[in-house]
Length: 182
Image (tube, rainbow, N blue to C red; front, side, top):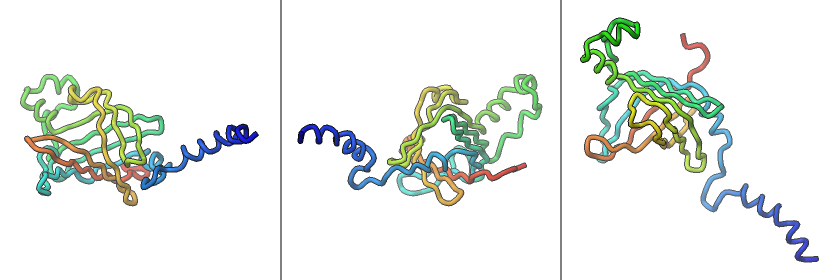
């Protein structure tokens, strides 16, 4: 009889253990997913060197960009460097292909984009971008882990990077897009 009662209580006890966070960890924030979903306009990108110096090696001090997370788990990011490319001037695909190679290289070097799916780890405060396609072919299939912090209508994403022979932290600040932004 005692064993039967214990066995009957086992699913309830197990369910409680699954819901309770581990000691010292905060409970998952169910709203983190809802907070991420939407469109975000780029505010700034900083590269922080190991000594704490802030540098702007790739995107300049005032880049422009858009980050989108949708409810179905898809995401996309696009960043135009500061200054953005001024050439080639022709807006058609034909015109771009016919432009001199140095102009095309400049345009590509001053723009960054990828898309894929995303997953969330609310306990670690991380969002992972599972890159399906990228302007940089070598990134395809990679998983980019970003730590996130919400501050009102701002989202800060940070990630480790190894560039220019040293480890850096890349910090991107995004502002939620509200309504019509035309």
